[in-house]
Length: 583
Image (cartoon, rainbow, N blue to C red):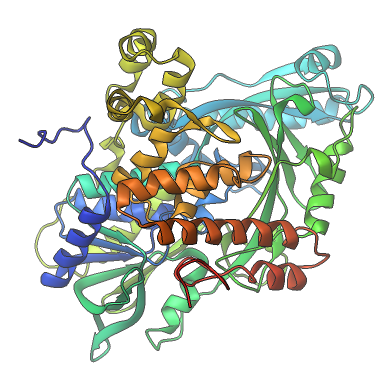
């Protein structure tokens, strides 16, 4: 007898569930169909289904495979927006930060402390201090405590104790403040599973190829299953376009001119080992254009980001040698011991969907979001910040609901914890007992709890049945074999790239970018998904081609050259030249 569903025990999101979701979407008209499986799309699917609406969601690639897996990994109010006097955006984001930390996803969203160093005299300290005070005050306006401590002033001596690797003459003192961080790709995958748990029909690797219309009204979509090549139609009373930087492309398929434009801004981040410089806190540094974050990330630092216009391939934005040098130059300006290219473990580039304005500088474009009924039956949501995804999703579904008949409930996602959240604090307090019961090291249990919450027991049961799954992956000691199998059977991972780049972060955290882990992970996935030897070899070949192309692109001097080199690697769904099993 299958286990009874509860809010603390997930259902699977594997190949069988994907096939069932597609069949259900084809069989009966949906109330709402969401296009896009990033943070806003998955948030909209959860919002719609928990209002009692018949909901579907399609993603052309993998969950969070675009912008939503390549952010700065921060859940924050955006302290720099205070200087732009965008108080409403900052307040809204800080309220959401507290909600994510304490109610929605305490297993995935964690507090992180930052240092804002000062270079001038008392006036600068007073100015920045006033901003920090306002930042703290806004975090209380949501009716609950902020979930993080207040800011603090540091003398020059206290600053150097907190961050010994800073150049001793670089700063006169500083302030520390708190925000939060998240594994963005893992959060989105968990959000998709949560929507599925509550009854949404969700399917990745299904591309929308056109819209169905009756007169001027959108009544559904034409779609293609990228895994099988099958084409079909899905009917929906309302369609929500949540495709981020692809918004304009998706709107163009309707044949109507969009009411606004979305411009892509490229942001590049570097990953360096935590031991390359000493600091107990992250750093927030001013640059000539924006700000630079140095963010603690497990056994690593994330350094970013750049902010430049990107008009090339949206699926695979490429970092250039110039991007990497820019980040190293700025962080080295404050470090006593300088970083070099040899210290860089990983590099990733993502695209921010910014609402286009009159300014040509992407750093000045709006982080506000817009929701509109662009044509009857089609709602578009665009812009915004990762942190405020729930508000964006709520606003999009509110707009869609206006086109539906009958009384429909208000949004309830403020009270819907993600799978793994309910009971997380109790599980964390029992982590030593859990480790002893399953004969697993406590550090490993802590790692799993902070990635899966109370669903950790599902991975520990896998290890009980197959003890070899407790072994770490080659070149990626933080991750174990059970996580690969679980990604394939429970988290919707259909390809090796899905696991190494998003369900885990091996592609950016490992020195070899996951080359050593790839064959082992592919064998584990193959066993779970029924792949033959040729398919396993092909998946490894795809992944290795990706790594080679990304490394090569990062040696190029400009965007055009980097884009051309990066696109030399075929995307999943097409075969690299000479791939095993291909003609």
